[in-house]
Image 1 (cartoon, rainbow, N blue to C red):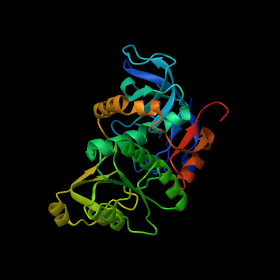
Image 2: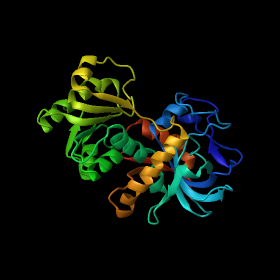
Image 3: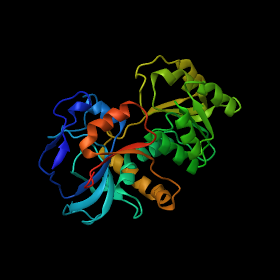
Length: 331
């Protein structure tokens, strides 16, 4: 089968398809014929050798943390799926390939009216967003939240989830085009971080009380303003560190406000924790996709043969929503 194997690390030019054997499956696994995968910023780090797969190193290091396709083979103890089922899956890697094996409890069915490309844009970002809002920030109806990078994959998913749960949203973006997009999602307040201070606006928006939580992808450059924006007893959830991972912190402010600082990442978690999260997501959130309350946001689709161009595009930070790799015939 064709797959992107990281024999070398570096720029997008190292993403060259090569032929490798089909993956084998064990008794609890399914083999998925992949029709679509999706990019995440973690893929860019892995390509550079900065984000290795968790657990035992695989024989072939293949990027790709999510996919959508058809079940082609089932293990002897699989009960959740049958051959021919349309599924999406959260992966520890392997999505940049024509076929991938995963445990049956790491996958779930695609709604009948949803395309493979749309489905591939759900697992990593919506699970991360749900985990950040509900599990890590412990938000509930009426709790105001700041969601940074609102036009990105996780950001746009988090905005939708927060609004569906009755949580007022302030989000930050870097252009008027992205501002218009997040406004169309229903964000209550949109801040162009190049023009205004989000912390000042957040405090004014909440009558100086502050927000209950901040979901942050930026790290170092936003730390001080994130803490300033939080109310007493609030939560700062770190999802990414685009501006740097090391920063000075005023511990006195954490003490005075009784703040909670939490980090989140899916790939490095034990598989049973990811299975539990997927089960909750399946039961509580997937019905909202069936009803149309939630939808994956697709920015651009690249054919699998142009995977290096897809990474170059993501590095320009132009995308609004997800960047998809299509492995369907003709693409």
